[in-house]
Image 1 (cartoon, rainbow, N blue to C red):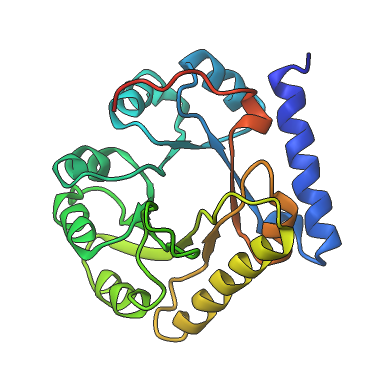
Image 2 (image 1 turned 30 degrees about the horizontal axis):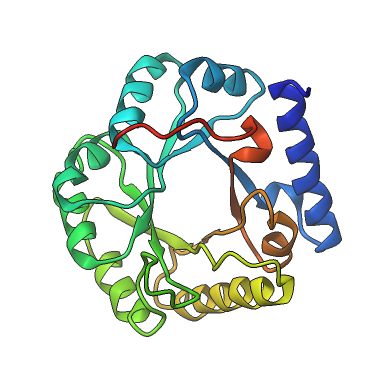
Length: 232
């Protein structure tokens, strides 16, 4: 059984190898360790390998971890669904939010971001595969939503996040990631802060990186099978 440090090394090596195959600089892709349901001890062990960015889905669990691990100076990313009545603790405690898909949520995050804090980095979640049950704005809604969010104070619109449909069709996945990269490229002349494509997970890192991912969200390949989720 691999140690956590070995798992992190394997994933980092895979990212570097995939970047080289895609003729990209390995430093151009950041690893976001998805630590939802993981213990503070596991996160401490991950931090000991040099990992600083962690992604959380469940708000209450995340807040407990942020407080317990404050001295480590970690960078916290909220990547789960956002209820409007829970935006304040997100605005107050996280550095990034990947799952914004409507203006109301972005406005609340903007209004509730502390004046002393740096601007909150935002990615718009796009429902790139147009699945009815999945969160995310539509491709058609994206340009106007991006303009409106980019104009908000205390917000820095950094990029797009997608979770394509579950499929073993790598060419379909490739087309979804490629379309996302094209959407970002189309928006960037108007919104120059855009520099992030949050896409790719444990099973499709190579395809996402080949199509331009700048941040990959990896959980299982780093920490092993997930523990049971706690209440949000």
